[in-house]
Length: 264
Ligand SMILES: Cc1cc2nc3c(=O)[nH]c(=O)nc-3n(C[C@H](O)[C@H](O)[C@H](O)COP(=O)(O)O)c2cc1C
Image (tube, rainbow, N blue to C red; front, top):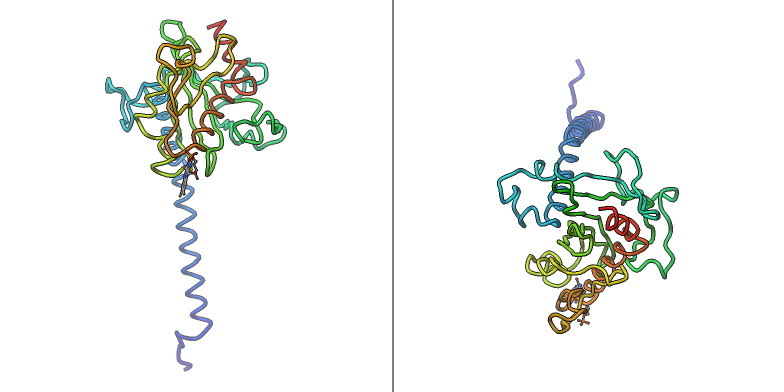
């Protein structure tokens, strides 16, 4: 009887292929099984970012100051889709709508000219999302997604405005590639706190935020629009100023915010 040669080429290949097959099945099954959990975690993360920008969730906290969960706090927001050109609400299914993905689709976005593209995003989606919180029917907060290029890459975040649609409530980034200690100071709580109370627009409704190395005299008209520049990070600083101005301007949420200011 022929002896079974377990070290023969055929058997080695068979074992190797079998192990690969089993492993790939396990990895694929894990990826599929974990996808809903990943999506849930991503959604939770976005909710936290929106709440933090709106000042409703302390930094690093996972529950509100009053002990309410992120889901409970976020439930106070109405999420609407907005046509950025007209500033009007549009009825689309927002469940899986991603404005950043839409910005990559030619039919769902527009290419910006060099003059228009102050945030260096190349394409801007036609429709984006806004997060609105009302208190006894009165507008309390509106949060808009913002993004733009810093030094090393695109910063993604949220800008929250108070119910007057003039005063900034907060700004926070959930993704960026800036250097820790330099441009990465966009995450510094003390710097982020400086945004609270800053006037986003001038008297004509034009974006007016400025990041400055030297502040204007306290109480002056200019001072109300100013935030400290990030020290040693001039390029990130310029990127942040540009992206805030872009998204509060005519090509961003300007038309929508104008509508909201008049209609509440
Ligand atoms: C390793 C390294 C990382 C840097 N990271 C940043 C950064 O994240 N953001 C930034 O604006 N500048 C960063 N800089 C500094 C810029 O290269 C540039 O010098 C600076 O933005 C200009 O600022 P200044 O005009 O205040 O000198 C970095 C420099 C080095 C060497």
